[in-house]
Image 1 (spheres, rainbow over the protein chains, first blue to last red):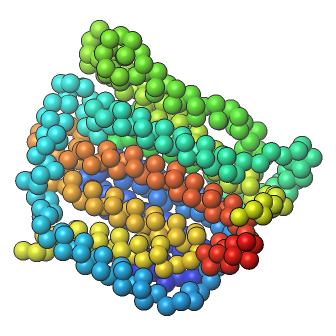
Image 2: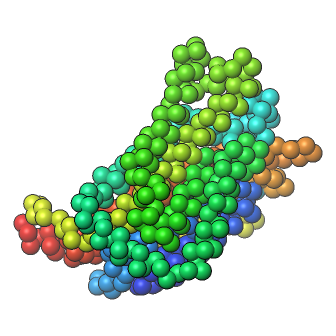
Image 3: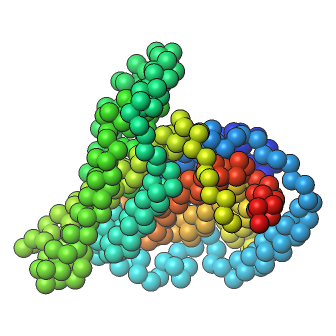
Length: 324
Length: 117
């Protein structure tokens, strides 16, 4: 909470973003304390990792200091205090923290807790709810992520001529020669990060983990590589059009699992249609759609980072549309 | 007895801090940071509602009968990843605005717009 208030006061955006990274990590540890291990996993890799990074990259393009506020923020403060007061008044009717009789725990959740083992056969309830009971929701989320990635692509992608690329290459190489220790340590770390991502991906049924977390961790490894070895090297490893294709394949995989279960005469995304034994079908379905989620999330994160970082190297493309 | 509600109050304070940043600051990057604080406060709200006293993480194992509610975890898990994707979209817009206007301060952008028309 203190950190959040410090963020308000700071003018130096670099410090603000660093603080928001710390804030993300703190809230991740808070989620662990609240038993939400899967969520903490995601928040640690997203809030403290990728989002900080993306904001920093955006910052290199937009300048790091904030202008002082000229008008007095009295009105804003008043609005905030009134809204906050009303919200606190609203909480007076809420159930107490940790009480087991709260309405939220009485409906739907008991069924998930008591019967998901027979129906789905996966110990991690979060995974079985995410990937099976509410698979349609998750499909929507994946499509949202995909769309956001496409939006970033549309806003930021630049087409370069080969000679420009060569110039950027030489610039990159001179920049990245220096950090020898970092490079070697990272080189050793990256295979393990990738391996860990795969573990998280396929062990999500039994422990905390799943496609979303694995995708983000996988992307983090690739982004780390791109940061230390230069964008051009990273682009040679992972081609832009290749990764775009992969993002689409992830969504396609997810959707086609649903269509297959439709064709087999069950509901959309009802995996018991996938195999003669319903529980085995559920396992197969969850595995497939988690794979789809992981592939999409990883590729979208990489696409977003590549486009931000690629934009950084040519500040010349000024917008020349003066219409308003 | 009212102390049992403290989790909501923390959420409200965090939410209002984020809200304040969004409405009182002119810098677009700062606004995005404010939005993400607001967003995290909603996450904390959901997760703290899911907590059951004496419960453990919702991964089924022998000998444990009390689990925290898994449903909010699922919702927030996906919301976090969607959140980063939309934040990235916002940052991309900020970068484009910087390129088109040469500034990410709201006032300066408005001034430029008024001059042009």
